[in-house]
Image (cartoon, rainbow, N blue to C red; front, top):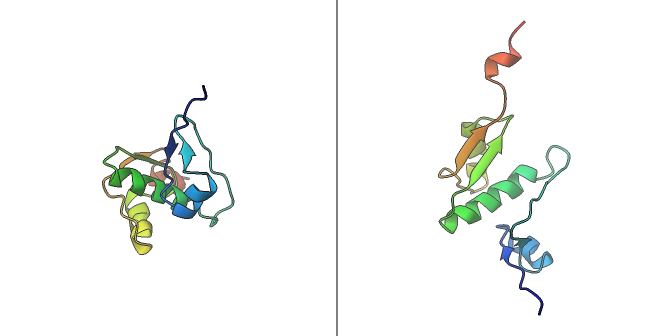
Length: 98
């Protein structure tokens, strides 16, 4: 007997349709691409969908600050203010040291 695969919605209905219901639960996904191709936007939609389902979600970031991420999301109608944030980037003074 075949086991049923559990799908997790991506937060983007068209993508979920292409994936026959969404992402496969229990798998890890890496989204890779050039700047401006929508990687962060995809992640924000995914996190927003998780928040809407009362899940705990984590945004791991390294370049932009939490405030910048939230502001960028708000510009396109995405609210992930209740997400947890983990900053892996260096402190801003790292870029100004001589």
